[in-house]
Image (cartoon, rainbow over all chains, first blue to last red; front, side):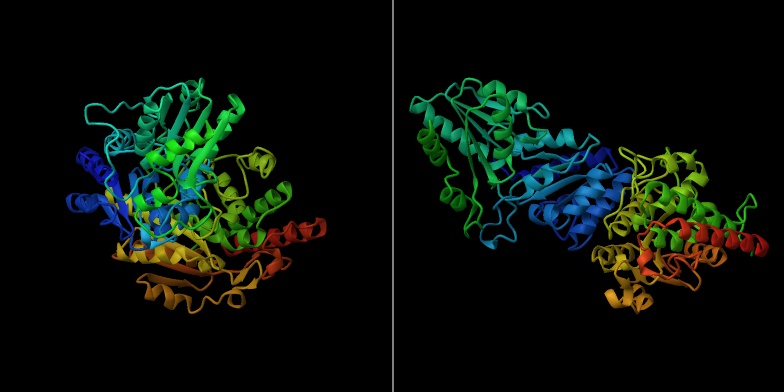
Length: 308
Length: 285
């Protein structure tokens, strides 16, 4: 059943907190929007409210992590990556503290609230910090698997999820997952679609349309944007004439840029990047914005046909 | 009360000896924030030799008192103190400071023993220290947390976020200190961005505030740190009135010495002045 990825994150953290007293969730007046209220209510001793102060949120999370805690600051992606970027860079990554930065309502999730609330830069800025891993899980099943690994490991990471429930890509019984390895959803020899986060579902829909049109299509769920799984990318796209990346992020410095670097260096071929263009996204729901920019099954299929 | 630690060392004199080490470190590396190193030295010596429970032996366990050098540019003074504590040899600092590939860089680096958190970007130390203090309380330890801030650094808004959180959570295991030397790189703090009434600001934020009238006096600093330990229900801020460049008239109260490498003539004079101050401190001790 489809549910919001942030809700799954809270569920995994609550399960972990039962046996691990060092699991701490921190919010910046964001417990409601982060779906973290159940955690705050069930584990008040393992919950820290810092008020509307994202620099403080990340600095405090880093200090606590240094003294043995596994900290999970949860705040809108736009704020936790931009307002507190220097804390992410210095206090978390550079000081190497066990902080998992959870960016909720990422991309254009906040729709009509405008560019101040959109996070179309977070992959670029977080990926360029040495020592910072970046994950964009696609649905609730993958989010669960990812968080079950992250809640136990000791390295910094940034995890971006959307605001709303997303349609399932996988199912409870069928969610193949290997940490830091892209999930191969379909294999194909003509074109390879590489997507992350909420763009995986439309990529899967596009593949169905393309297969029906006789175009053999591979779909990779590159939830691990950093470290990017170059091996699977090169292996699965070896036969393809075209690679198309799809992401809910600026055209600059995101999944498309990274995939193009790998393909350009190791297996040169045409790479087309579907992303948010260099402009403030228009007001509207995520679905409306995705449709406007061609980030839908039909839009992706049309792009493939145009370039193949 | 004599300014000595348990082994009878005269700490006021030690601070002058370590200032000489700092000058040599800066000359060896051809750069360093000399003025703030000199103003903060007495507070560092007090902290490491009288106040904090931290040693090269207990450091790796993580079970010790904690320190974040928020004014990270004064790292040369921290290197001199940590070397004196036995965390690494002074000779290593002198050989490696600011050289290619060195771990002894111009800001605190937690790849080195004795240093817990990296800093250098200003306005980070207090929120991090708040996090440490919160974790220590959750962990039911008696470990205390210290952080030293520059006065010019207080223009960074993140300090005030940390100030609110520390008071909100009644962190009496947290003690911060402001190196109130009244100078920053562009000139007087009150001309660059007025800070006064500094005491009233911290009181208004809910802190216990102690003004250390002579922040270069080990006895006064020791008494203030002890008073902080005895405080319950709120964090303590020590506003330490210090002299930038303390120890030699060549450097004292000169904004131009915020970041400066002494030339040969200046070096000789500074070393003579520090030797004289050392002897004077020994006599008074």
